[in-house]
Image (cartoon, rainbow, N blue to C red; front, side, top):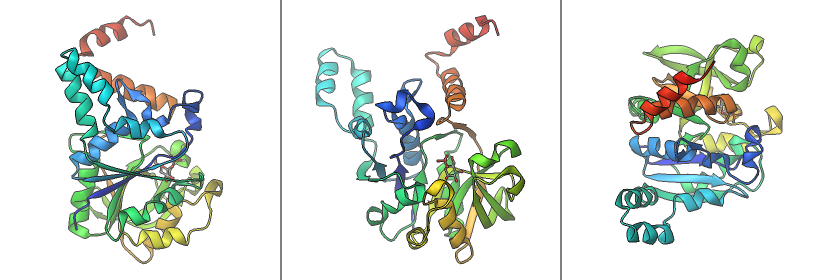
Length: 287
Ligand code: G1P
């Protein structure tokens, strides 16, 4: 079955990015001029997704407004003859079909995904964590859907991470199953470096079979008292095969200040309208 639906957990409070996230959803922070969540929605569309399900919370209405039509703005741009901007604004609201549901309490990533159970139904689906921005020739999720097509089981995105940073991630233990591909035998959420089963960290892209909901329903609060997706996947791994793909691409943790800066600079350098002057500016910095 084709992966048609994607779940975007977006109810988090963004505490790593205070004070800006006090009144602005972190998903709306811009890399150059485009909100983080739009990069991920564009990756989803380029990977064949038709339905985007956003799990929101209090104070997140800017996300809904962003993907909605904006008549006032469109009329203004039309009157001023700014056709390029008008097209851009219209294209954003026509990207794909959106639905929204709320996670009333911040009970963790696993709980957020469970909130999408009815909207997803009985079909495999993608999950995008908006902090992870992946710049790649072939969209990361597309690379994963290719694996799904072949095996018809859940697929996690993984990347090798230095030991000293491993405790920020879910970490897999796996056996080699092909080119950059592993079959997952165990998972641990945010282990201490000495306890990590490997250096393969889970990055925020998942393809999950609907069995995951049953495991999520039976998952008790884990690390930080939250219902962890990693714990549900660990329970599932014994019964349903789970694959992990070391995808090709540059990944930025845009939910972290330094990662956000790196992503901003790298993406700005790829923009024809900014590159030359920006390079001149960077060269002139006394580092
Ligand atoms: C979440 C997951 C973790 C995963 C990470 C990827 O953690 O719980 O397993 O490795 O995303 O970015 P968070 O970064 O939300 O703390």
